[in-house]
Image (tube, rainbow, N blue to C red; front, side, top):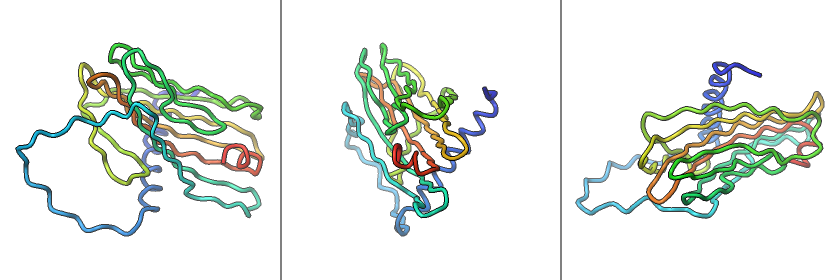
Amino acid sequence: MRDRGTVTRVAVQAVAAGLVFAACTTGPSQSVSPPPRPSTVRQAAHPVQTELQQRTRLRFACHNCSNPEAVTILSSGRNLQPGQQGVVLTVRGVGNLMGSCSRGHPAVRFRLTGRGMPGPPVVTEVRAPLARPIGFLLLTGFLPPAPPPVGGEQQFAFFQVVGGGESADFSLALWATLTPATGGCAFAANGVLRIRGSDFLQRLG
């Protein structure tokens, strides 16, 4: 089991790597528009997404290599009502990030769903409160407005899942923001999945 400091450094490196993957695969840069003038019209409330909204995109693959590998980016968002539980992000063949909203207090846990993997996957995690609300979805390339926390602090959760052996392995870096919001809890998650080996590419890719 890794110490908390090591896992924290891995979390920071994983988030940075995800941002690099997103930046390197976006289209040509767009001209920056001047900031809009302040409006006296009251802004609409943060949109509530009660159903899971997830996007998955293959960013890199080398099927003809001596040991095939691939990297996939995942992004998702969902709101849960008080007392509700549900999937916040799903990683095929590996597991699901499960969210819950108990009296406006969001929480997440990672549930493994893979079967028959060589050696049980190892899951490590880091959790910490955030000083101010943030929002980022890797596959959109922009910062969506984060809902303002209501009745509590926004939380950051990072999970690292590693499994496999010498001939084939995978590693998943997954991070999410958990926000207590009006009428429930808001979740936003991003992940980077690296797969090595033909067997794992068929099962997880």
